[in-house]
Length: 195
Image 1 (cartoon, helix red, strand yellow):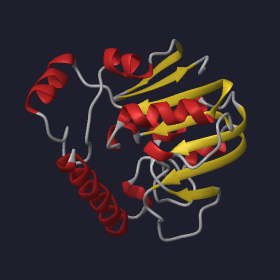
Image 2 (tube, rainbow, N blue to C red; image 1 turned 120 degrees about the vertical axis):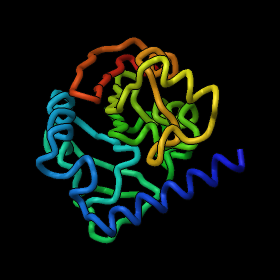
Image 3 (cartoon, helix red, strand yellow; image 1 turned 90 degrees about the vertical axis):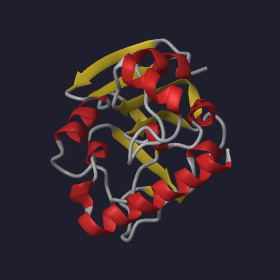
Image 4 (tube, rainbow, N blue to C red; image 1 turned 45 degrees about the vertical axis):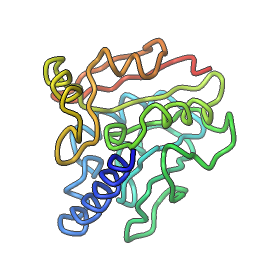
């Protein structure tokens, strides 16, 4: 466990240094990024109070403009500018929010960066209302690449602690899939009936 936490800390520092070097254009959720626009359109039917788990360092991820509601975000990095949404510094594995608070929780390219995915999913389910939803935007790998990674351990690649296949993501959430959309190299999964 100690090595995994150290790897997570190194990854967080690497992401921060990348942002300082390249700015928002180096991140997936900047304005005009096709994947962010695609994800935003997939979650546009939701209304209410939303939580972006692993919101990143940019002031306003572009997918937030699609659904109408109040956005909250949590990330271990403060960023270097004022956020255009409610922000709390913290980690996905220990969400500092009350039970049944949000209508929608999103993991937008953040799930594969987490130190403990299962704990983060449990926390997301806890803070989402009984009739709420969780939306995931992530890369899915082929079974053989996943099997090789599981056999060898360590980080999935230089940017990700873990990786998923369609099968493993469904197993982790243990929830029925409400909607499944594909974008080249990425997938959006919306899970229904959280509780």
